Picture 1: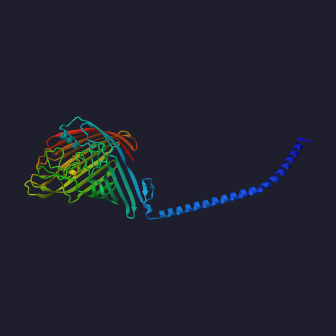
Picture 2: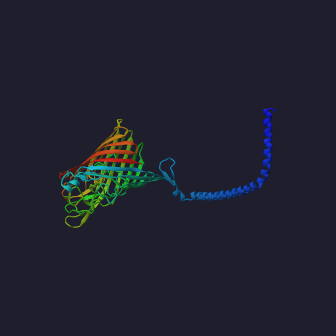
Picture 3: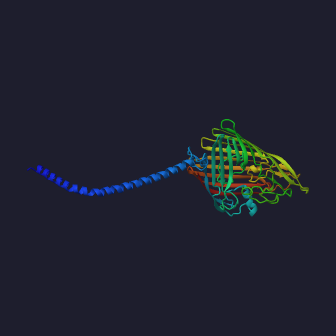
Length: 486
């Protein structure tokens, strides 16, 4: 027999034997397999019941969420991403949060003036220490200028309704030391609707045609006031607008001396922060502090401003009218009489950008009775009492000139000089020797922005103050700042 046939025979034999053995074993295992299948079927039924119960729970939760979304109040709590990627949505309201963190390290050559070095500080140091250069330099750091801004926009059937709140950390109780107890304060808070602005904002008479300073006080002669107001902005052509505003007249003061009036409140403090100086009797010999009584608020200040721009050139012109009134204590002791005077101011400002990445800026102001609006120095009086017992508006004027140069895409330098003057009233009820005559400020800085939100800067500041009596003082510091915009 051949090998091929022998292999086939052996394979057939093995198959027959395997079948004979497997058949009895299969019939003996059938009862056990049936029992196992029953157990598996029961487990499957239990799993199906659990899945049905979980499905019912999920369906119930989905129904509750649907009902909550259909609730008229749920939109007020729903926070979502804005469609344009700007800010986020709270119901129908778009909310945007931004601001900056600012760290200031300052070395004062004469005294501890914090981050608000101004001419009033120079004369204050002179009065307190009897010398213009006491030689006790001081170093300190602060984060008080850090700022937070929140803007909202809500669509309505009549147009968009906007809101704005801005805060920093120069709130009260104010301490002149560098980094003691930074406290939040509201700088600006207003709503907008169409062409209207209602709330606390920069005065419409303000002019910001000057360069960036790291010093928080800023240049002399700046038109600077934040106050409650109602403003209407009208479109007057391409890139041209006209503002009309009624603003809070409060915060001004009246010069008095030789017992002509008693001071009921002080002007802005020597550091430039309002109401930091306690009330004191009027004393014309107290140098550096123009003290007097408050003006009474009977009518709002009226402001009109024109703003326009064309290519590299921008321009603004503004005018303000004020009605100042106060009670004057008579020198003869016969009580007090109310007197009033009209104040006014004019402002011109503009900027010009050249192809060389150079920008020139100029801001100028002239007026009578506008002391609270002009840093000349901070807290300048609006009016004074004459020797005849009349109220007269005090004349003030000044300018700020700026050269800003972009050196590279990351480096910018600014040179800002401000000069302010006050008249010498020859009919003042007291001595004029201690009154403000002129003051100036000079700022030179270099700003480095390695990436868009981050800026490092160094600045040299020098301020000078001269009284009507010829006494002058100066102060200077060097400041390093880190600013993170978000």
